[in-house]
Length: 262
Image (cartoon, rainbow, N blue to C red; front, top):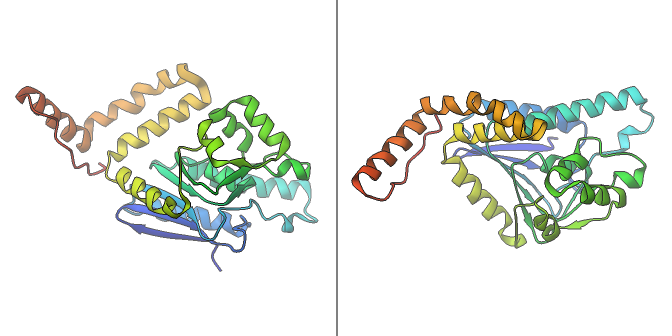
């Protein structure tokens, strides 16, 4: 039975976690995520929504199969997870995560790969790995540090204490906290809005942010023109710039542009 489901509608690809009761990220999910990402690349999707069925987003990885595995086998498993998660993170589309309930361990590390995170008021985030005597195996601690700073990332990882959604919002890990009943509606509306935007420009901004994250401002400056200049040849930029210039010359407000994503 599948643990991941994909629906593409109105140019939004919705990925749903569904492995009750805790939406544990079992090994099966790695291949399913890779297949879903391939399907998205072949679709007309221009934005992605990551969500989960049930009361909780995810309790994290399924640790039961780890019993009896050698260190080499575990490393191979984690490398496959990391490869799939990184591929998800590098999608050339805006990705919105909608998180409710508990979002722990690998579930948090998956949500951190999104560009925008909406959280329900019930959401709680945490790194339970410390209680097992292991580290965050899929890049969780330093991705939190990238958003909230080293000291908070260390505290949250060292203690494994659940962190409230409003605290995560205050420190920049979560974009918006909304009532649970409105979570999916608002996250989907935001994804629909981004799906109507300049898709190639969204991809360029993701690439620039990745350059900055890996090498700082200097690296992003070095990559800037190679990434951004090709946008001037896109249909969206030509339409957007032409309409803005015409409006400026006529002394009129800039009209809304219907971007095509190309």
